[in-house]
Length: 200
Image (cartoon, rainbow, N blue to C red):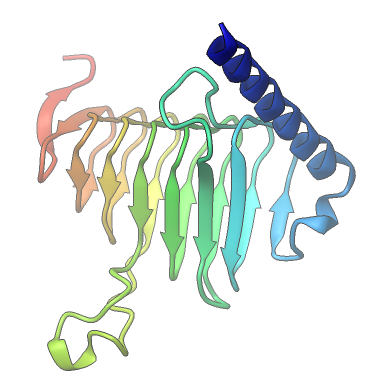
């Protein structure tokens, strides 16, 4: 019984923190960072961590986190726009589940009405060079990532540099995406391959 009371108290504190964060963002958006531009209101159920020197634009009606899904407690959405010219753009009506990490060296663009599952990793560069002598000094090749409107990215998906996910497409849980995913496609696996075309 005591453990149940502790869990309920912990849940209540998490909800209060989320509501407080929403209030701060709504009333005092300039307190976040001058690099972050919120186009409209949204709902936060998990912390958001803004890091790096680039810009971040988030559209209206966003949702971050899910209280009833795994990894809710203690996690965060990590938006890392690393360099001065880096840019993360998130469209309207985007829902991002718990513990998602976006690492941007050049450009990561997420369209409207996109769903992103739990513990997804999106990166537009490898952060280290390929050759041993340059591994610590190089950030690797910068290749933009685009996730088009109404795409659904399942839990624990890894999206690698240069990937383009088409409109209405679905990436199955646990997949590793590298390259082009056409519109209205379902991709799965490592590496992710076409398993079905939506509507056929």
